[in-house]
Length: 333
Ligand SMILES: [Zn+2]
Image 1 (cartoon, helix red, strand yellow):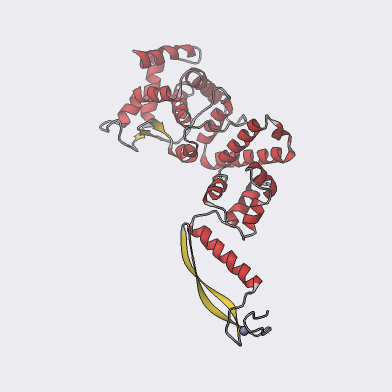
Image 2 (cartoon, rainbow, N blue to C red):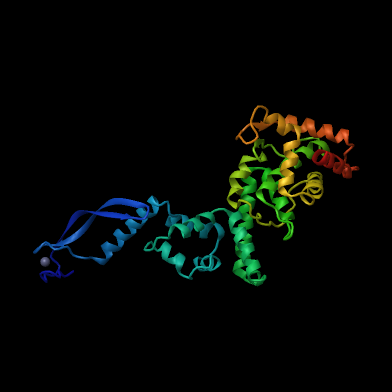
């Protein structure tokens, strides 16, 4: 190490100094140990020390700007068993973008960081992959790396299903039924869950899943599902592969809801049906229509109401079509 001021070689001492870092979304001091010339006191530059400091500073910047960390990026590769290169490609980034991020020298900007963070959710990755298939007219599906990633993503979704309960099996079944010209949105999904719960009391004599829904301004909402899918806003949800994890009796109920609700009505109309039904009205008693409420729609109310309309309109497994009479009367009379 040579001093550029006085030319002295390898005569230095380490001193603590405080450096100030300030920029878009971050501001902090970092105390670092750097070399100074022993003879004239000029600061010396050691590349290795500077690299370590840069790494430290970048970590801190990420932290303060809530930028994804190196560990979190690496976790994505582990989770989906995908290479840095392939994920970069899918994201439409330069081949070495991700490599730069994890080597620590480069910090993702806010937008790229958020994109990467969103990939922590396998449903988001699934959606990205489906968009990619469309974009390439299916060509990308032939790639081995793509198939491998698809498999890992499906495995991660099954993990969510197993850890968050049966309601996710119902969700994934409905997502497997969506088609290009009949896609499913978060708003519609919430209502389909509610109707499935109701009709399961009629056809199978029991509740379909344990979760309770809340009577929000826009109808019945299962919060655990809201938290997962709100990020998709009004966009179509990703289409899933169909796996049989439910009993035939349960699938019969879901087929029924698909046929008489999902295939017939828009999400807005599904919301309206929910609004007009007694369990929702009871849960929102005394609450103005535009006011938020977290009041639960009682399962007992759902059960009683659906058993009642089944009786009134003679709706049964053998007479499924009669549900049309009920829905028409509810909506249009
Ligand atoms: Zn010097």
